[in-house]
Image (tube, each protein chain N blue to C red):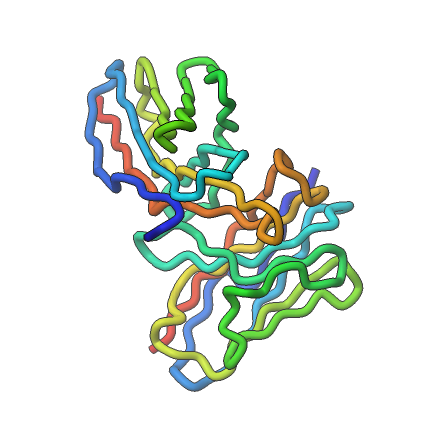
Length: 112
Length: 115
């Protein structure tokens, strides 16, 4: 079983739409969670960390459900510039503390 | 602040040849990572250094891959001999330290095509 499972999409939405991505993780002891964004042929960049209480950064809202081992990202009022691949990421623990486990990414295209 | 630098940006080789990638992390970052990203997948960690020591190389195919970070700054990743399935983007990342919420910053990657 993969550490992080993510629906690859693609998601194609019009400007202004609200879109949600989900992922699940397998290690119940995990404590650090992130969403990274990767533009086409570019490197991944941290979009936001995900905290237990849920957190918001402008149009982006991240939620964590530890009981279900489920992470979500909500994008409101989508912009053309939001088109990218969104990677769900879980950090290892103990001897694998530095290791980031990436999902395969969910591709988003926002059209005018 | 300068980001993570990598070279070359692209490399095309034939199978069984050797290839080496270079990474210069963000100044002052003690932790350096090499990831492999195959098309359509998320990055997978190959090896992690803390200063010049290896912290985690459990996912490095050691029969053909090697990496070093001799002076605790720059790092090189080598593949010898290359196989077709090594075609991927090799990403170098660095972080200030090894901690739960420490952000990893990625370089632009080296795209390798093995023919």
